[in-house]
Length: 471
Figure (tube, rainbow, N blue to C red):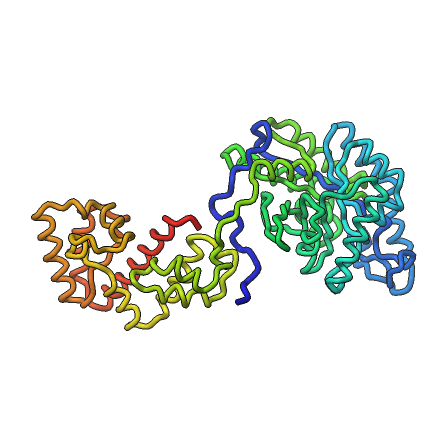
C-alpha cells in the first residue's frame, strides 16, 4: 500500500541533545552561495536570461536575449561582493561552507583559489543555477553526475555536500542515490540534522534556511536595510541560544549571496551580527561538513521497525493487543493513510482510535465487553492478558484485602447490571482510592454518558499500552 511520504513529526516533542563539541550551546553554519556565472543566460545555452534574486524589481526572463543589467548585478557578486565577504570571514577566521554551482566555479578560478586557501568547505550547488522542477528525473540525475564531475575537475576534490536550491520533488532522492554525499540540504524542515533512509542507504540531511537568508533583500516581504537583517539574525540567535542553555542545542544556518549581502549597505548588518554572536560563549561556528561529521559520530542512524512500513499482518500482530481482545482494530487501522508521522506512540494511538470511534455502537460495545472486571474472577484465576495484569497491579488491585475484594466485586456486579458491560478505567491514572471513588460517581451516570466515558477510558488504556512499547 502506498504511504503518505511527508514527515510532519520529525523529532517530535523530544528532540535529541545535539551535544555540540566542547558543550557549545549553538552551532552556526555560515553558507555563501556562489552562483555568479552559473545563472540562466543564453551564453550558457539557456533559452532566456535570469530573473531570480537580484536588485531588479519585478525582473522577468528575456527569451533569446541577454539581460545586461541582470548580468552586471551577478558580476558584481563575483567581482566585488565575494572579496568583501572573503575579507570579513578570513579576518575573523570563521569557517564557511560554499554552495558552489559547478559552472560558476569553473568561471571563477581566482575565487576558487581563495576559497581553498581559506580552508572553506566547497559543496556542490548543482551544475547550473536554474529551475529544476520541470526537468525529468533521468535528466536531473545526469546533471547531478556532471556537476560532481565538473566540480571535482575544477576544485580538485569531489564535493561531499549538496544543495540544489531550485530543486524538484526528486532532488533529495536522486542526490542520496549517488552515495556521494556526507550531507544534503534541500530541506528546510528542522533545526537539527536528521537521517533519512533513501535508496537503501542512510543519508544525513542538514536542513537549510530561506528566512535567515539575505535572499530576503530581493524578495517581498523582505529586508530593505542591513539593520533589519541584523535584527532578524539576532532574534534568531537569542531564541536558539536560550534553547541551547536549556539543554536543547540547535543549529543556526545563515544563507548568504555575494551579489546581495556583498553590497556595502547590506554587509554592515551581517558584520554587526557577527560581532554580537562572537561576544557569546558556547557558540560553535562550523562548516556543514563539520556538523555532519559530529552528527554521524554522536547520533548515528537508528533502525527501529516503523509502523508505516509494516505489512498488515505485522501491524496487526504488533498492535492487535492494544485494544483488549480486538485485533481487528489494528488490522483496519493499517488501511488508513499512514506515514512517518505515525511512527510513534501518538501516531499509532491516533489511527487505532479512529477505527474504534467509527466502528459503530455494537462493535464498540463488543470491545467494552471484552475487558475484564477490575479485581474480578479472571484476575484471581490469573487469566488476564499480560497488559491487564500489569495495569491492575499498578494500582495495587492484585493485593486487595478480603473486604476490599468484596467491595470491588459488589461494585462490578452493580455496574454490569446497570450498563451491560464491565467498569473500565485507566488504572495507571489512579490509586485504589480514586478508582473506588470513580466507581461510585460513574454509577450515577445515565447509559449514554457512561458509554461515552467507558469508550474514552478504553482509548486512554490503549495510549498507556503504546507508551510501554518501543516504537
